[in-house]
Structures are given as C-alpha cells and as structure tokens.
Length: 354
Image 1 (cartoon, one colour):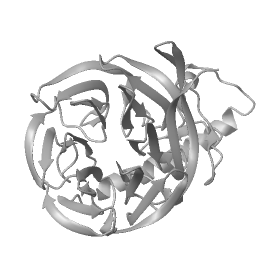
Image 2 (image 1 turned 90 degrees about the vertical axis):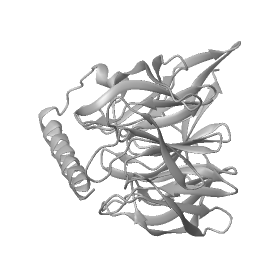
Image 3 (image 1 turned 45 degrees about the vertical axis):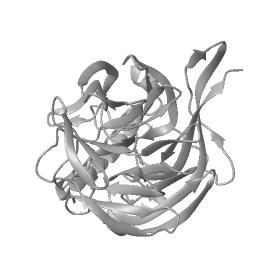
C-alpha cells in the first residue's frame, strides 16, 4: 500500500501539471466532445457544489425514467460537510445513520476517525483502534458494523466490530489474508467481500463472513480490486474495477443463493475506483476513474438485466467515495476530486419530473 499511495501522489501531481499546460494552450477555446456528455473531470474543473450543513444544494443532472405513470429523474444535492476532506473511507448504514470509517486525508495520511451522518448533521462517532484506509464496512447485526481489512502502510486482515450505540470497538475475527481495496455488502445477515489486494497479490475471491468467520464462496473471472459492488435482492452486482492489466467495464452478477457467477453486461466505458449503491431495483455506479486516471462525474444506472445507462451526473468529478443506501436515498461520503480529497456529503434520490 506504500507503493499505491506513492502512485496516487504522483498521479495527482501529473494531473495538476496537465491542467496548467492545457490552460496555457487552450485559453479562450471551447472544446465540445463526448467527454462533456460523460462529465470526465481530470482536465476540467466543474464548479464545486455549494456546501451547507443545514440544507441541500442542487447539483448534477439526471436522465428520466418511468415508474408506472410517473416519470422520475435522479436528483443530486449536497446535504452536509465532513469536518475535513477524506477519500477511501469505509461506509455503512445502520439505524437511519451513515457511518464513515477512516480514509485518507489531504496529506494522503490514514485517519482513525469515525464520522456519523444523520440527515444534514455530521458528528463524531469515536475512533478506530488504529488509522486505516481502503477498508470496507457492512452491518453485522445487533447494532454492530464490521470494519474489514484496509491498512495504513500495509494491508491488514483484521475484522473490527464497531458498536454503534457506544462507539466502542472490539476485534472480532480475521480475513483469510490481509486485504485492502476490497468491497463488502451484507445480504441476508452474511457479509460478502469481493476482491481486494493482499499487499503482494490481487484477489479473485468472493468471501462469505458470518460471526467473524470467513470462507470462499466464489471466484471472479480475474483478480480485481477497487470494484463497485451493491446488492439487488439476493444477488451481488459487481461493476468495473481495476484488474492486473487496467480498468474493466464488465458487470458481473453473483448469486448468494447458489454461488453462481456470470457476466450480464458492460458499463458504457471502463471504470475503477467507483462506488455503488442500490435504489428502487437498480444499482447506481457513482463516479470513478477512467482510462486516463481521471475522476468522472457520471452516475451509471444498471438494471437487473445488466443493461447500463447514463443516469445522471455529480456536481463534480469524483472517485474513491463511500456510497450506501439509507432511508430510500443514496448517501455519498467524501471521495477524491481533480484536486484531492473532498468533504462533501451528497444525497441521490429519484424525484418526479415537473
């Protein structure tokens, strides 16, 4: 993970240099291309969403979809601001609240902070036993959220139980190997972990974890990390991610019932470092990095059939955010924009068109 952090810092410096060169060469020009439609943000700087802790700000656009006789669009608004910018936090929802664990700060240092988001308010939920980033989190029952893997200077295998009521933590088990850059979701009381990085090798495993014990229940077609995962019913939808040779556009479906895995579609373009959450029978893939390592504004909707479409756009280009469904809305926490980590908390929901 030391090498990964160094690559991120180098990529960020390169993006800054490219923007300065582009500004000098293209001053006064207006370039219209397909990238505008998709909202790629690595070489452009869209206006940031207005930040507020007492209400929502409008931002982003969405295509319409019809539910019954009502046409709806994916709406996006910023609803809160974190105490400080953060990317790669592990995010989970429990009891009407969203919890964000750890992450990387603007100096690319790991944090041990636990932030609790309820509506438009953000409060401290305590601290983790040690700073970490690139972990995953999922509800584990009885008011507990499990924080899985991640690391600081190296990947770790620990599973830490966070008690939402008290803010206390306790070691509850271990993954079979150290694992960071993983994705996790709870289906029917079992936490499923997809892919990740051991610190030396990429993982192609799908793990099932219950009561702190993990076992392999599936294999990906190829090792994968930084993939976007959400549950639709008893199925996991696994979209995009980083393979050993680069980003992928594959959309996979894994059944938690019979443990079958198949490819059901493709994203409009390859993406990695995106996040995902389910809403009203679809999975929405939020932001990510494109083939040029640039954050994007696109929100891609995936139907149960695997068909993917551009569902909307974020107020700003974003990768490495945390996303989770809570109270019939998707909450997006932090992430990395063209200039580094951000502090915005976004809400995405389906709103009737006027």
